[in-house]
Image (cartoon, rainbow, N blue to C red; front, side, top):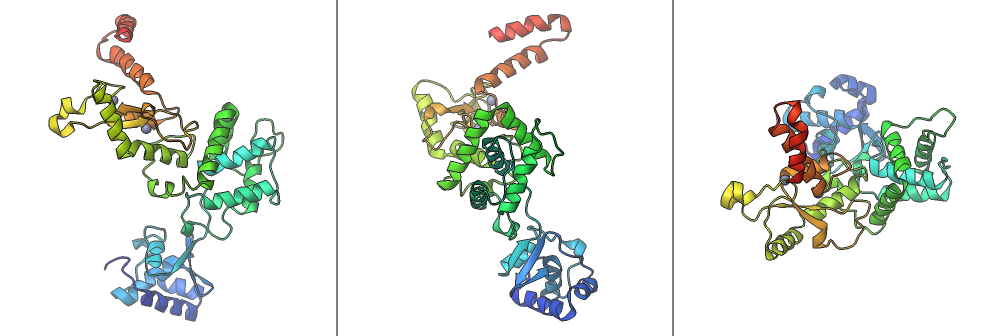
Length: 351
Ligand SMILES: [Zn+2]
Ligand SMILES: [Zn+2]
């Protein structure tokens, strides 16, 4: 059995049987339950996508797939049906991401921390903007995706979590609260972040980024959201820029050692590591606008240190990380007892 190898023809046959039996009997016959994640759209009607995909296997491969043999999601059923040329739509809209909540929270802030109604022009504008954001794939959205009602509701979810709000909070999730508190703690930075995300979407600069980066960003922590993070990574991975930076450092008589820990790839790996080092873009995300990247904005950082910088926010500068490493080396490697800890600590600082 080759899972997912289904033809358009087989899907149409499954649809025909579904129509003939009706939903309940079709699902019962093949022991599927109602679709929870995706619906198949065909000639103006909706079908349980997982059941249809499973039954289509009967026509192409001799037997229907059992519900427990595959998922209804984008790895399996939804993807197979799309590949066969069908339209698939999410049952439930995806949760709001940090980027989206940042924009909503900014709007609530500019409204004096009060929620806004669905017919407010600013809500309608934000709804349009959220549709342009390259974060949720088309197939994951249904017809109510981030419509003005949903956006208005989100502004109340945020506003009713404000510490000064005296009533009962409406729904909202942990991420709403998290972003709200970041706005309260660092209003200028977060407002700037919101403006940059907006700008990036309206100019199209951020459009192509986020979807392809998905999943890859798990080890990264950026209060500024995924879109600005993706732009940061794109800048750092720009081969031309890295080459120029390396050439500039060498020209000035420097080495390609990590600015934080001193690791030198060539020293450790010989020819295999020669000329290798990563670049980290040191300008904070909320300040790095659309402008061109200057070589002085890039620091040479080894792969390990680069990971550690991005692992949790706020990101340390290379210098801060170097300090941390030196402090730890001083205390961890040379100190058997508490007594001498302070002494070596200072000695390490002075190196
Ligand atoms: Zn390093
Ligand atoms: Zn970086």
